[in-house]
Image (cartoon, rainbow, N blue to C red):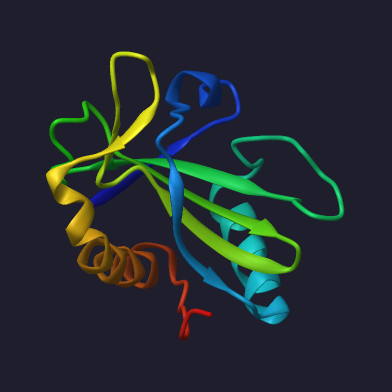
Length: 132
């Protein structure tokens, strides 16, 4: 699995309504550590929405990981009310009416989440503790 950063200029084209919460960590120190590490490695976040509830959102296209029948796979790392959130469209796709619907892979989201944690540690140097 490889992560390809989606810059703010490309963000709109990577956006999918099927991105749903994968994990959430309530640890303000972790939020700051992740924010700092992502900014150091990638610069400006994928979206610009500084505020009190949400100050960063880094979006990645996930390469080399099957999310069929969906044509792409997205991972979002963001903060929300001092919590770190990992979100993804893994196990989801958009139906003909552009509404999110579960795929056969939905049952594998926990396994996918474990792999994401491992990849974040390996590729970005981000160590995640237990989720809340």
